[in-house]
Structure formats: structure tokens, C-alpha cells
Length: 455
Image (cartoon, rainbow, N blue to C red; front, top):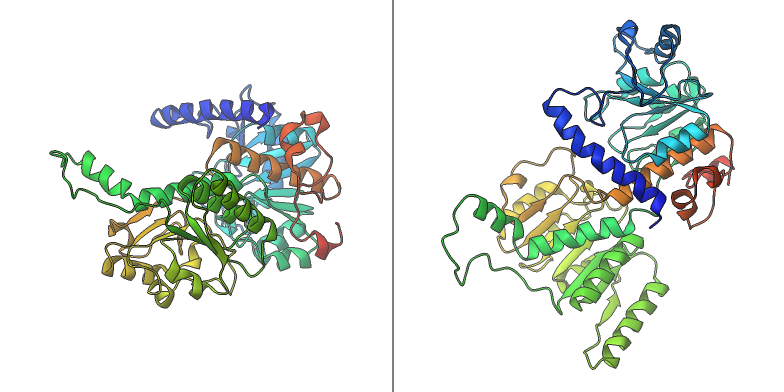
């Protein structure tokens, strides 16, 4: 991948190590250094600055605090870190993001960037409304936020020209509410595919081979010597993997299991995937040419047809009314007693209460979960199931991907506030690779572009 993005991410990695140290020492900034300009509506006179961004006068600080004032007098405005204070377009970023390129893009687009530094992991809608204030050109928001009519109305009233979700999925965004108010919504496709697929593969292996159980056992000092029956798991080689949803991530995951473990494949998707099927045929022929047995594959007509056949089932579908609780008690009972279920899509695709019950009743059944129905909470009993591998929504958490997501989200906002067109191309690498001055003057991905007539 391009050196420009990766260099900035190396710097971000160094900052993250610093931030751990500064946390212990009571440091001020989210990056582990003293923050740039901090604003609070409660005490604008206490504003501080550092060399990491331009300082500005107390009168400008007061004006900025005023522009961020809450529409509800009951809510204090969370503090923000200001970059490029003289920028023409006021852009709110609700969480600090990894890397430096995203900030460089916004500054190059003449944006005054205000990064919320609240210690709250998830901002309430009231807090976000107060941050938007009376004048806000664009917002770069998070998938943990509930972007509904309330937030889009606040953004419209503040003169907002766009919002970008820091995610490829946008089930946290009520897009019709944005469209009704003429607000484009961006997302970040194209940089999560392999990273998310790798995490799903890691969950698959960890669950099948009982890695987490063994790790806990070892750390507890219980290991007294090798035993023939100690943490015996399941071999994946030449077994059958099923994927529900054969989009980019589902296909990337399938290829990892098919190529790495020569697993047969069953896939379910509402639409046939001819290019994917051609790859599977070609890989089978390659194995034959090497004197090996070819893999077999087929497209299932339904999820119910797929489940009983597979040793591993990985979910890669969108979350909508049709897929909510797709994996319910009845469908879980269709799976093999020794199967592995993996979910790195969206939590509500699984009925988590039914899953806990199934895990407890079937100790040889395994699952690997990156997402949860009531995230960040888990349903009662899930944490007590040793046959569940659970991680905190980290499927996109590689330096390359998280930095790339920040870059795409920032460029969406930078383009929208400047009135640039939509990119309308699959290849988003120019936004990640090119020098800042040569980045295309376009928004990489706007999900409601067609509805707004801005394609």
C-alpha cells in the first residue's frame, strides 16, 4: 500500500504508545501530547494552545465557543481541539482519528477542524447537537452515534452541507432523514475488506482450536504437563465453510479459508456471484493440476439449506429488517453440534439470547463474535461461555484500514463543504496514495447521492 498513508500511520502508532504513558501520568491530549486549542463553553478563558496547531486569540476562542453553543441550555458543550482556526468551513469531528492524512486533507480544503475531546466513549445526541451549534458546515461522525432526524435537523439549521460516517456500514444513520433535509451522507468502502476478513478468519481459528480457553488456562497457572485430551479442538482442513452474504468481505474471507485450508464452500446470497464462482472453479482446476483433490462449491438457495452442511458458518450480510435475528433459535439448531459460527458483520444479525442458550446446551459448538446485539453490552451469560471467543468490534482495527477510513471520511466532508462532485468510481486508491495537493476534488462515497441528484 502506498507509502504516504503508511508513514502517517506509523506516526499514529507512536502517538498511541505515548498516549498510554500520558494516561498514566494524567496527560491532557488524546494523542498523548498536550492538546491543540481546547474549547469549553463553560470556561473559554481557560483555553490552552500548543505548537501542534495554530493558537488564536481569546476573542476567537469565545466566538468559536459561541458557535458551538448548545440549542439546549441544559447541556454543556464538550471540549474540542481546534486545528486550522482560520479555516473557512467549520467541521466537527466527534472522535479523534488515527493517522495524520485525514487532518491534512481537511486543512487543505480550508476547514477549521474541531475534534471533540470528551472522555465519553459514546456521545449522546444532546452532546452532538451542542457541538454542532449554530454554525457547522460538516460533521465526521462515528458508527456508535445515533444519526437520526434530530441530529440532521440540527445540522441543517446550522447550515450543514454533509456528514460522513467513519465506517463502511451506516445502519446507525437514518439516511432518509438526511435526504429529506438535503444532506449528503458519506461512508468509507474499499479499505475494510481484507482487514475485516482476516479478523473473521482469526475468530474462526481461535474458536475451532480453543485458543482463548487455552490461553486463560495457561495464564491461571493450571498447566502441569501435556495431556492427550487437553483442549482438543476441530481441524478445518478439507471441511466445509459456509458464508452468508457473498459481498467483498464475504468473498475475501471465503478465499482465505478455501486457499488456506482447502475447504469446500457453500455460499448464500440473494444474487449469484459469477466472478466469484469463476474463481472457485479456477482454484479447483489449479489443485487438480497439482495432483490434489479439487475443492467443491455450491450456491445454496436459502440459509436453511446452507446451515446443516457446514462446519463453519460466517456471517457477512447487511443488517436490515430481513437479516435482524437471522440466526435465531430455530436456525442455530439447524447447525452441526460441532460447528463454528462467526459474526463480524452486525450484532443484531444474531439473536444473542438464543445464542447464549445454544452455547450452554452444546459445549462442542463454538462461536467467534466481533459485534454484539446491544453493543457495547453483551446479553447475560455470554461472557461466561468458554466456547465463545469475543472481541470488542475490532474487525477494522489495522493501522492501514483505520487510517484509510479516516482519510475517506475526511475527504467526503472536505468535498461536500466545498461543493465538489461525487467520485463515482470503485477505485478509491487515489485518495489514499496521492500527495495531498493531487487528491481528486471529489467525495469518495456518498450513499444517498442518487436520491439527492448529485451523482
